[in-house]
Amino acid sequence: VASAAVGFLMFIVVGKPIASLQNALTDWLNGLSGSNAVILGVVLGLMMCFDMGGPLNKVAYAFAVGGLADPTPGGLKVMAAVMAAGMVPPLAMALATTVRRGLFTKTERENGRAAWVLGASFITEGAIPFAAADPLRVIPSVMAGGAVTGA
Image (tube, rainbow, N blue to C red; front, top):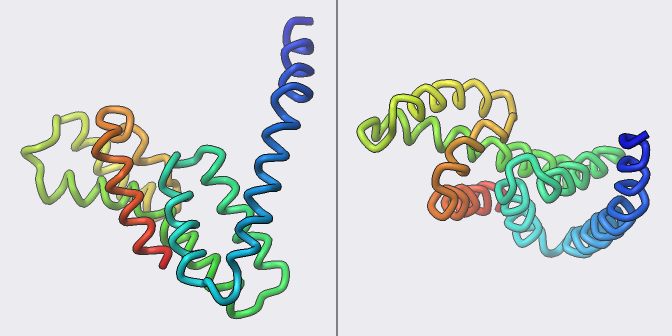
């Protein structure tokens, strides 16, 4: 009973505002398509790297997948930008733990080895342990990398 009540509340109270927000974001991204391709790539790259698997990441990915419905060169470029930007956080953390081993704990280095595989598999969440440990340095740095990659 409690699960049904909470599920109902989530669907009605939280779900509808979140859906409205995601629709507004998608409409805004559609407005950036075309002549603003670089800006669109930067924004999508930032979205992919900001919350690493969270709602903004999913909106950016859904927008790119929507562009594949009509596989034009522009739609394919958007998907390529989103895929590449989504791989940035785990691959950046994996590279950092390999190149600057002394700056990371043993556990972080182990997470870095796993992040190679996760990043190559487009699993952005591989960078979450690093972002949780040091969000003020990790999140802005991977967002910058994602923005450059998306552009």
